Every structure is written in structure tokens, then in C-alpha cells.
Length: 92
Image 1 (cartoon, rainbow, N blue to C red):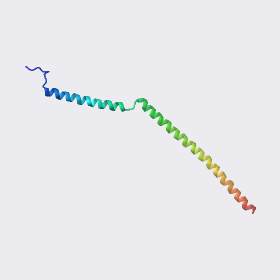
Image 2: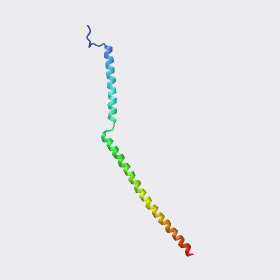
Image 3: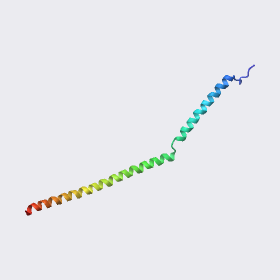
Image 4: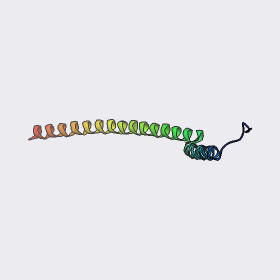
């Protein structure tokens, strides 16, 4: 009488193929997991993005302040030249 744990060679070969396929899939999954960024890398990237954004905003504020100052100087210069032109015409 055959034992219930006795397998045919065909069944053993099929099971071995299934085990190799599962092992191969696990190796692929482990390699993919190894490529995922760590929590530390994610925090560093987020911090760098935040600091970069802050630097860009501060540079924009600085440039707008400089432009406003230059605009005021240009308006004063224009007004001074206009006054000088009027004064020259009046002295002729």
C-alpha cells in the first residue's frame, strides 16, 4: 500500500520548479526593496527642498527690494533732470 507522503518523480520535479520560481521572485522583491530610499534619505530630501525654496523666496524678496530702491532712485534722477531742463530753458 502506497504511503500518503510518497510522491511521484513528476510531482517532485514540479514542486522543485515551483520552489525555484518562488525563490527567484523573492530575490527580485528583495532587490527592489534594497533600492527604496530610507527614511533618513527622504527626510534629507524634504529638508533640502524646504531650504532651497526658502532661499529662492528670500532671494526674490531681496531682488524686489533692490528693484524698488532702484526705481525710486531712477524717478528722483528723472525728476532732477527734468528740473534742470526747465531751469535751462528759463535762463535762455
